[in-house]
Length: 453
Ligand SMILES: [Zn+2]
Ligand SMILES: [Zn+2]
Ligand SMILES: [Zn+2]
Image (cartoon, rainbow, N blue to C red; front, side, top):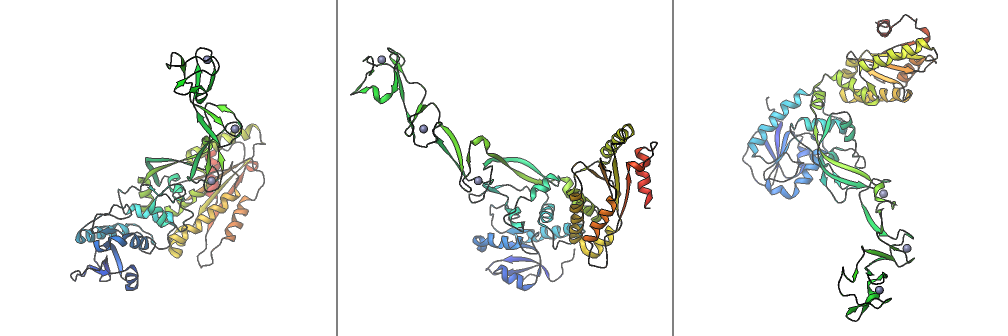
């Protein structure tokens, strides 16, 4: 790859460096931004060690969020890409630029979740570790996820990427109990009286006289230097022979209740919720890695990326399972035609044109919104499936009311784009009442598919 004059490594330092066309030195992030240099990466010299985190935060929140950032010294922070000599750092950044070229979509205006995927894609073997943070509501955060978040109050969006198997949990790092109301890990435990819930309880040793069987607080037996039973006046010299100490006991100063174990409750410091500790939710923190599927997902054809977005909003099943389900239901329908159903096929005609016109990020939003609206319209018993040819099948069991395709068309009109290029979809539908008894699932799906060719 040819480095254009404006594409350079950006060094942060107050030290003087020999002149070199491949890098430029800045003494602040602001002065770098003003320069309008297109960085291939960043390098923080050791005189900026105290300031590295600030610089790093600025980078991750800028348009250059995905670029490598190396340090001269070894600074133990997973947000940095390691410490390298400047020449090596430049080489690594050039390799990274080649990798970026493989992504066939613009890195501008990506959602936080897409940014995280790209970030991990460019850092092949990176594992993100949860970092202990006393001030974090759940005591652990993933620093890079926090930095890439648009909203600091919403940093759990990465779980969606795990659910979609683009990222995966690897190693369990810690297990935290959190409030079952507000999910804060800032909780503490209190022992109280099981009878009146007062915290004014005291542990007191009980003593058991073997001679007469009397049990009372230990202090009741003490007379001067000796232990004497207040009831039978026996001298209690040897534990195990004259007396023993039953298991630790508690007495409540409020209600006088004597008990073996106090009750333990938790109290949330954030919302005040109280309760039994076994009611607490458990949150586990793992290291996170990108899956192979996640990498492939990023390298896929843009059209496929867009189409896969549709999956996020639907509980979709495989084509095979979809066919089994439909086949079974058609048989039910033959036996008893009150088992009505509808089958809908949606074809996306111009995904490529939409991408070309609006760009990948906006297109993602467009189809995501579309999928969201359709999923709102569906009942949770409806089943969605997509096949490899950009077709979305929807099976609606126990449906008689016709006109579903009209409603989908209306929905499209509501979110139709302002620009010259409009979303085009093709919808066909079939209701069980219009299906002849001889039809099987293959014929049914083929007919529906051919209908709008
Ligand atoms: Zn009590
Ligand atoms: Zn006694
Ligand atoms: Zn709480």
